[in-house]
Image 1 (cartoon, rainbow, N blue to C red):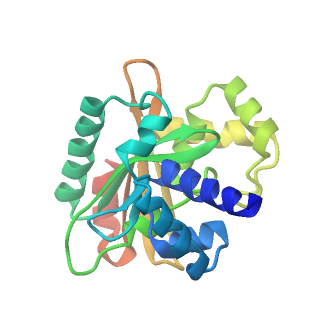
Image 2 (image 1 turned 90 degrees about the vertical axis):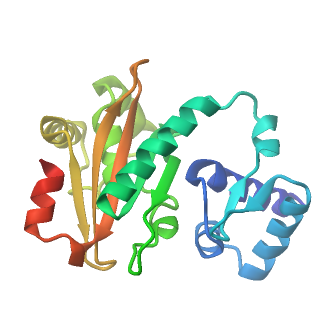
Length: 230
């Protein structure tokens, strides 16, 4: 029974951080086999705490979010975020995502994907984004204060192999300074054949979010890359 409760909360935690998550991603992240996972998801759907999205993935319902107190973002603000990220996806013909730092994790606030024949699987890419090994995560870390970065490393450790073998605060400060100077983070993933970009979004209350764009390498020649960075 205790194990089942732990599994349920592991699923709910991932959905709260990643927004819309596929069955394959949930199985990979939680380590559950698909049979067990499907049984738990079916029960949570019957209870009204999660639902299937338009793309047949899984997301939390308003009923569950209501149990957690006030939303981190008001409904009107979330709708504004959705419009902006959707506009980015439509303008570029790719997939966009807006993220924030929450509980030492990269949390997806909203995401949008342009509909075309060959697309990056954004639901898979944006599931459990690494804080140190993703463009969004590096933006969020780089725009923390020096004290906040030190506290973060005290809790979760240094990036190490996830980010240029960084294993000390001076190295992390130097990497963060470079990102702040260019105001953009860029990463290529040859294995998945994608390239990702992220820039900071400065909120009126002083909070930093990251706006990211992901696309296949085959659609990102040097001319396109220069246009995005510019």
